[in-house]
Length: 65
Image (cartoon, rainbow, N blue to C red; front, side, top):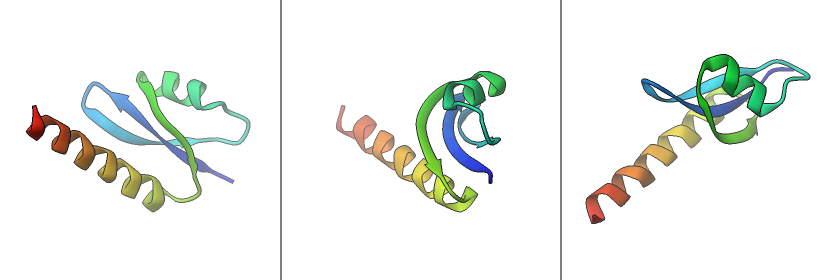
């Protein structure tokens, strides 16, 4: 069963697909990025919703600076 996590790559935050048996760090490394949220999320949609929430939090923090 696939699981999903959030990684940061050069282009920004992204949802990454984790194959069974892979660690979150391995998945992030394969994407060429950094692990942001290991989840694991059961669906792409759940992971994407979490990604959007992280982006919204980041934008709010930027506005208060």
